[in-house]
Image 1 (spheres, one colour):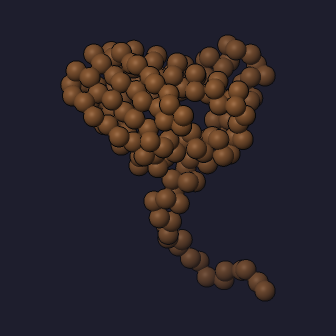
Image 2 (cartoon, rainbow, N blue to C red):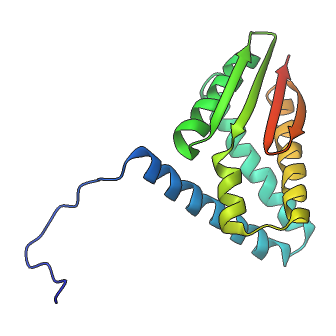
Amino acid sequence: MTTATLNKTVVEPKWNTTQIQEQVTRIYSTQMMTAQQVLAKYGEQAMEEFSNAMRANKINYYRSLNVTTPIELVKAMSEFETNVFGSKIEIWGDDKSATLKYIQCGMWNALKTHGKLNAQQEEQMGAKFEQCMSAMTHELGFKMETKFEGESCTMTFSK
């Protein structure tokens, strides 16, 4: 049996949203894990520089959306996470204080599946996530409180 294609064919996208999200989270999570493993060989300074650069990109993204209030921040975060990574998120609040609760985090699930993390690595990743989010929200002019409960994470942002 041959798999040759004799005529030029324009390939059309056929994946549904779930298939796209699964592949985006797979690729992003494996790239992040690979980058972390390589950078670890060059020491803590390389890891910190990488984290700072990634955080700066997030900050620039939210600034480009003109996020100025806690509710605008949780809306922007949840829309991105839900659409790109397939996360399930609840949000509530107002211009003074707003909360984002991960019912299911698509990226966390992908990291666990493709990164094959042990319990210690999961704990370290959770701590790094909290550090990154705290630093990012501080630079955006917000305060953040985080609460982890099992697989769920709740973040409350205020001015």
